[in-house]
Image (cartoon, rainbow, N blue to C red; front, side, top):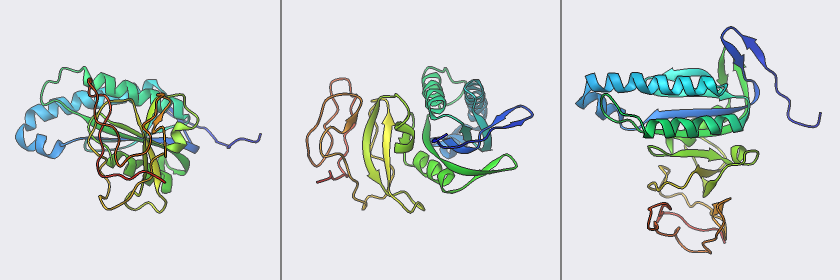
Length: 231
């Protein structure tokens, strides 16, 4: 009572999340070129990639509702389970000895109400999760405000961005502090950063400037030059 309602449908093979759902979208970076340069090796690497993702998502209670090429779409009932799963996926991929070319995956996570029909999901929330994923880079996990709010996880606040095909701007956060290039979003879009303290749950503050601080000795903090702070 008083909280968001959700319903769980028991299906053969597991539990299907519905109602308020956390969506995970993944994609292998540069796969087209990898297929062109080493198709045999890519086939082996992708088979291992698929096994890692499926095993990790299944163990965390995720429901894989779509795969397309080297992309996964997964539904979770709880955002904490989704975030824990994608952190494990990235850690596993990073330490993997690949039989062919090494693979890097970008990940987007978003929580929203969605319509489930015949084991598939529809709605703006699903589209938003897909656009969040496409804004990232290999090894990066991007999440929305809707995911960060109920989950105890260290994130970097990357500001508010307009994503292609999504009506309202979306505030994005990066899980972890690995350095990455600027987000893959429209360069002419002005994003809004916090007036102070752009790091969420990391402590510390940057003050207000035209860009985030340069990478430190361990290259742990990304530098962004195509962004503007809020006033």
